[in-house]
Length: 72
Image (tube, rainbow, N blue to C red; front, top):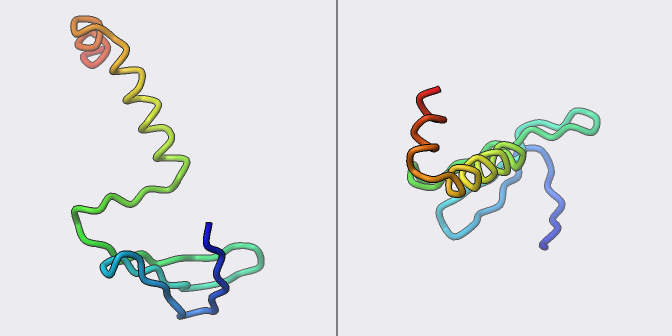
């Protein structure tokens, strides 16, 4: 893991096409801005983990069971 210190309005670049900028710092909360190409998905980690869990569950169902689950 790379650990960096950044101040408000300072940024870092990842892979030449993703820019992460510190927008605001309030106490222990930091607001980040992320500029990335449309084809690069950007998720909060907790949302990403939920998506992975749902995908894992769906992959473990057989086709008919998955269709019933999808349709309610």
